[in-house]
Amino acid sequence: MQGPAIRIAGEMGLFTVVVDADSQAPNAGLADRFEQIDLKDKEGIEALGRSLQKKGGLGGIMTAGTDFSATVAWAAERLGLSGIPWEAALNASDKERMRGCFKKAGLPSPEFLSLSAIPAQWPPAAAAEASSALAAYPLVVKPVDNMGGRGCRRVNCLAELQAAAGEALGFSRSGRAIVEAFMEGPEFSVDAIVYGEEIIICGLADRHIFFPPYFIEMGHTMPTAFNREDQRRVLETFRAGIRALGIAGPGHAGAAKGDIKLTPSGPMIGEIAARLSGGYMSGWTYPYASGVEPVRGAILACLGRKPGGLEPQKGWTSAERAFISIPGKIRALRGAEAARQIPFVQDLFFRAAEGSRAKFPENNVTKCGNVISAAPSREAAVEAAEKAARTILIRLEPGDEETASFLAASPFPAGAAPVLASPAPDQAPGGFPPDAFSLTGELRGLLARLPEGGAATEPSAGGPAILAFPEFAASGLRDYMGRTVEESLEAVRLLTGLSLPLAGTLSDNKTVLGRSFWAALVRGGYQGAAYLVDSGPAEKTGGGSPE
Image (cartoon, rainbow, N blue to C red; front, side, top):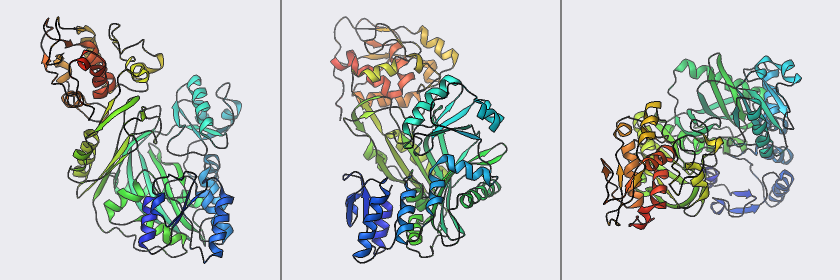
């Protein structure tokens, strides 16, 4: 997420010095100079700044897409550089302080309580005193000082709250978490450049959140599709939140990123950070949609110069979409070049690689990758991004315990199938992780009555067939990536290299995959079905190359 800042600063003729705890950090090689300093080490970064000042000057310090704006503010304040006050940065980095500022200012934000340990009961006396809203589920638990949705979860009972509190406390650098009232409604992301009292909005996007009880952003679309009045109310609340945190003010310079929900009672502030957004918004989708680079404005602000040129130059739409995987070890990734060739696709980013392990995402940093499109119309941009995300196929290694355990949560595991074990109680259908396809009760009944299939009396060179399940194929259901049943079957054929024709009945002279195959497809999508094929007789009858 720092890449655009490094690139744009170079285009502006600036000498760039970047810091990170990891010497192999992405984009470190783009800078003129790299220093290995942990971003939490504010004193170390201040010391680097002083040495740079002594050697000929330091123009400014900034970040984008990371929750280390407090480090930036600390160094800027002590080095006499443009920025925001240290206290304001703390307000925007610590969710407990943030909620307190909003409450003091009378701004719409959920009621909350802080935690430093797992609660023995709920609601505690403090919750009853604070607000009746905290005595009613659902609630949300999150660490006070992390980003990317790490440790953030919706809870519906005491047992879930206790488990979520332990997770959130583990993700907190300070060992604190908050419990807050759940906000119902669509969510927006918004960026702004702050210069003195001026707040310059740089994009309002619709966020697409899935997979409760977690809050996984499977993409965003820029600009929002909501009407002007809704936009006005959301942005008015965002600006008020920026002022309440102390980010805007005389002599201040920086950026702000907000997550705002439009609840039935009106806009409510999820959170506001003192930086530009990550998630490919400030550095990619807004520039593609508007022709404007917010990062350039943020660089000018940190240099003490008034940001200019932030008026939109065009009215395109840019869509970002993620692609994900069920748990397992990645054997092969396919479809990258085909995805890049789809009209209006601009970028393809991989977080996963062959040989690495994947898991079903519980936060926004465990997705497998992202696609970004840009087009003159919203329909074309969304279609391109979603088609490209579906084009990426991830094949998993057979015989993996995590994958087998995941598939074992199928509603109809077959005891004879080697890849299926006893269902895990915490992975029951309808829970988390979800099934790829959400079957109706009628379809589940039909699946339960499908024969298991059978093996040929003699090996068949053509590979196995699939027992037809026409009711499922004709249902119109799509998986959580938008693939139809037929598209999912084609993905299985492509990954395995097998023709896998549909068979109307079982046959003595051909291996036929029945209920277990369809249960794996329902549970794990094309990945689950391909894993079952790879782990069974199909692997012995000419399964396709992992390439």
